[in-house]
Amino acid sequence: MTATKPTFPPRYEPLERLGQGGGGEVWSARDRVTGKLVALKLLREGADDAEVMALVREATALSGIEGLGVPRVLQFGRLPGSGRTYLARELVEGSSLAEQIESKADPRSCIAALIDAAELLTSLHRRSGWTSHARRPRARGAMA
Image (cartoon, rainbow, N blue to C red; front, top):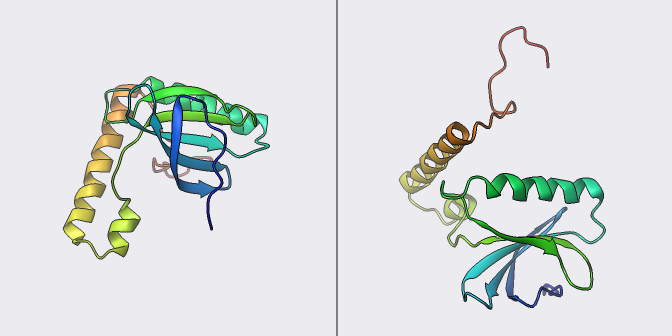
């Protein structure tokens, strides 16, 4: 099935849809000003206020951790015409862990990728002060 290209801001030349889910889609695009590749995360048409606010929170949180191995937030706005909310970030090229596993990659490289991700997540948590209750074991007898 061919992906229909939304109308992008003039600054970005859409290249290909990288993924799609219930909340929207992610496209690779070329920044016509810098020539660099970017990732554009687009909310689905008809996204409600809660979904838009979640993307605003994501953009705000990510803007505060630049330089920690996280792709920079470049722009946040609405698409011309449809008004769909989007977030532009640096594009990180490579394969996902799922793609590596499916391709029967060396298990050591998959484990190394997981270790790298865990170390980055640990660094981000320490430097930003974030805590994630979902990933922290609950003390015995603690209430939910």
